[in-house]
Image: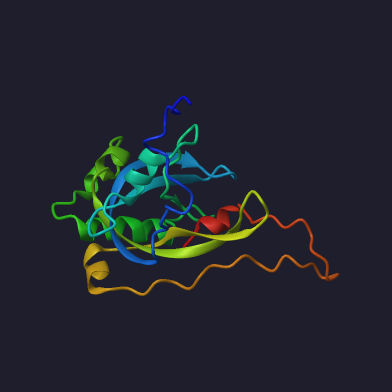
Length: 191
């Protein structure tokens, strides 16, 4: 028998260990400016765990990912402005948490062409929680996601994990199960 090309790097079923909910000190791996489905400005913030026993959790998962194309496991979408064109509170919370977590932070660098590059490598606190979803076989599962940003010192002092975010009950008013699809509306991007 011929040995498959990726034999040494593929994880066996059951060897994947999901990240536990709670507070983590994260490193910003990459930031991209993008648009929501409704055309609103937002950021895609790629994170990895920077310290502790779970350090490099997402980098290791990415390395072991056999999908084509590979997908980074921790990305937070954050709207920049609210519907009235004012600062989105989640965006302000993110920037404040990054500023408090990194000595020598220069806010002037944010409002330049170097915005995304300036944030790369910075630390930020992330509060991770579980979110329910429907997998490709129609079964309910949980994924662990960064749900809130905090400064690193707050994470070090300890934070509680948020309650599980469950899917809405897919039963319609008639009492039968409709073809339920989780919302991907811009409002779901706010935290």
